[in-house]
Length: 443
Ligand SMILES: Nc1ncnc2c1ncn2[C@@H]1O[C@H](COP(=O)(O)OP(=O)(O)OP(=O)(O)O)[C@@H](O)[C@H]1O
Ligand SMILES: [Mg+2]
Image (cartoon, rainbow, N blue to C red):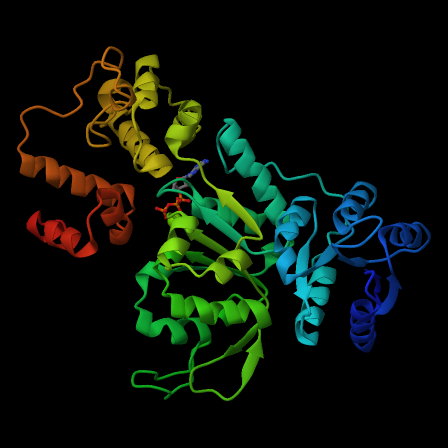
């Protein structure tokens, strides 16, 4: 039986366009001119999808959306917006809209969005997930968890920001896990790790023989991620020209492989991560504004570990494992007094190292190799010399060279061997890091 779709728009031309299009696709469509009419229609008829304009007289789209979500929480809603109304979209997503369409959208884009919405429709009123993988009880992490749930329930692209090691990838994977797309692929791509020359071929794929070295057909990331998620890590390293190409795919879903005549339509949800501030990148023109606004249907900012230091004991116990490994109170104090430039990942590494060192014993201060983490306790960092744990901030008797070697080693460990990130953590460029690694025999 044809799915029933309710359109709500005060502009007859807009709703006629949609109605015609959707009827051609075989749907049963009813159009209403405002929120009140829409609510009455819904009381008397079952609909499987609502497509609603945002700016309407009487009851606007946001108000309608809150009524809908209270009364029929599982009914998917796509909102319509003119380009200049994109701010309202963010609010609509917060209120539970599944996705949005910019007016006017091409028939192909509308069809795809509608079909996807109907496919994703959850079968029952499901309780919000708990997102257990994100450990922590601070208000800052609670807000992150809330946004992960929101992202999982909608289908918009997500921008995830935060310093190195704060959990951006963990968040991206959690969004996917709890979303109706969970059965689809999750393709992770680190933009920093592939040369710009390969961008086209990596994202769009290539035909065999289309350039030297292309000895077989290659589907490309976008087609791999079709029906699921493409996680774009370290977005800050993608060239603006490539960002423009990506934006085109976001807008029309068309992918054409290098050397191919035929294009394919893909449906990909983008989760992008960066450890830089998007505002600053836009000022520098390293991030295209149009791409940013398309990607941040929802934006999730991960707090640094210092912003949620109350979570350190919970995280420490989490990383020590469930086998009853305990910490001495001193050790927990020391962990809470440390500044964590490498954030949660660094804490994880320190705890795992300590656990190995402690064996059967409780983990004590002596097992924590904190000297290499941050040369200065939180107390020292905030200029308060009277408190602190009394540990020496910088280990005595080391040469500068040895300190440097340790810093490089530690940064590499904290970044799981990822040189780009380790270089960032050390605030040097990659070539300097490479030289230091050679110098210290670390490569
Ligand atoms: N809230 C959290 N609870 C439990 N583990 C966490 C949390 N946040 C991060 N982690 C863990 O910390 C490590 C680093 O996280 P992740 O790789 O997601 O960071 P990231 O922000 O992507 O870092 P980078 O910018 O360096 O790529 C992972 O092992 C992850 O599981
Ligand atoms: Mg990461």
